[in-house]
Image (cartoon, rainbow, N blue to C red; front, side, top):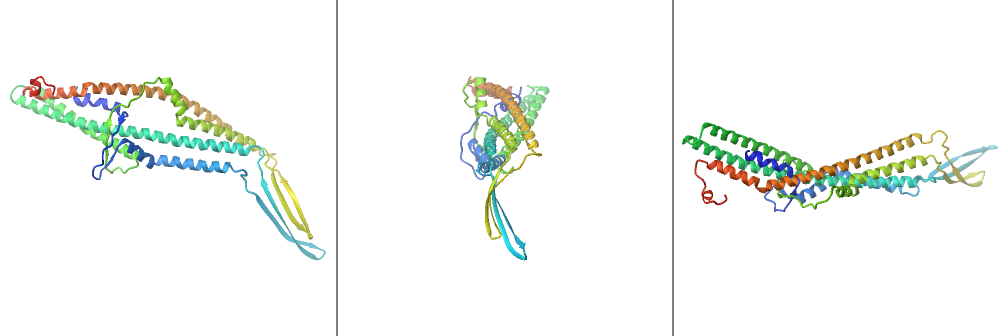
Length: 382
């Protein structure tokens, strides 16, 4: 199998295994390491900034829900003449009322707002984690496709050298036309693979620039090496336990359920009348009248049926979403463990001399019939 088919096939499996080292920038071209790419993404990514705004909105709602008195007091006034016995007097009155929740509505509302704030914070953390993972993968893909370009270029050069050697042997009568045509096919295949590798690299760099919120036309150079990260062997059950305890999306789903349950309690308690306490002052016939007032709304017709039904459905949806997410996380942990194991094995197989052997075969093909290099004649490893 030619080098372009054998060597390059291993690189996509190890894209995510990246360890970066910093190198100074060069000229006007932006040069980034993995850590710098992650920092740029967290600072500039619009989805992260949108999630931060959602947290601010949730904090504002929590601040409102924590007020001791949610409703503002109401002030009313009355002014008018009193006609009596042909005489007219000016009468007036003032009243001040304050609604006071006594059915636990404030606590339920505050619990819902706190849960929504926690859920928003968890979603922000989830977006950050996802973004970091996406940047790491895109950065690794950029490095891997760049390595593919370099290997494809080297393979093309070797294939062209082999073609030249075959043509030279054909002219001297040491090779057949079939051998020359075969070499031409391999050279054409190598050139095609080089063009495909260049296209893959351009696509990978475009995806990375999108994550970093950079202009597509901005020059970008990556500095790092493709190496496997050291991960301690851990049982799948341990990874699953860590995921259930630390996954931000799972925390957000639990908080969404808690918020839905608090909203359901609030809807149920909204039926309890909210009294309006107040005081009034009036002046009638030169008499000053001061009174305390108490008002109640009677829940005879509207008992908040729609809101109570909606919140029950919201709780059911949140429970189902949480259960589905827990099942999906278990599947993702199993899949991630298998993919990591396969990538590790692929890396070890690729670095075990496959590429060097392919290079040696290409070099031997090039020099067949034209004399072996001095290093090989002397038994020295090329």
